[in-house]
Length: 93
Image (tube, rainbow, N blue to C red; front, side, top):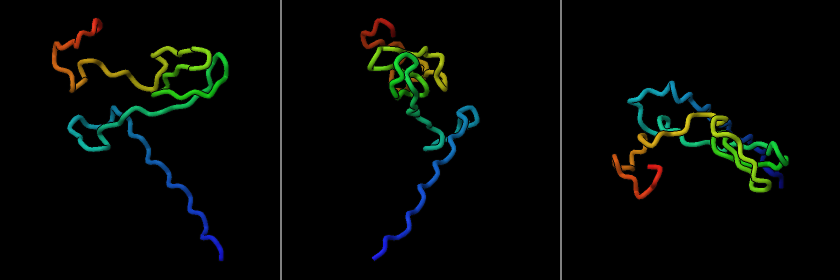
């Protein structure tokens, strides 16, 4: 009995540029979440994972600067689950 030929893995759909998505768009294509990215630690060479190009090494403690990320960080004002002026006892809020 022979095994069926292996099918190639489907190619992932290209991620649209967030600036090209219309503001009125809705649905899965309009909401693009953070992307898990991988790199080598610049200090010790360990393979590390991060979100959108922001990394922190659990082995040696190296951290890259937040400005090196692939996209802008969200602003607090953009958080739809936070009431205006509500700090939740957060001294930074």
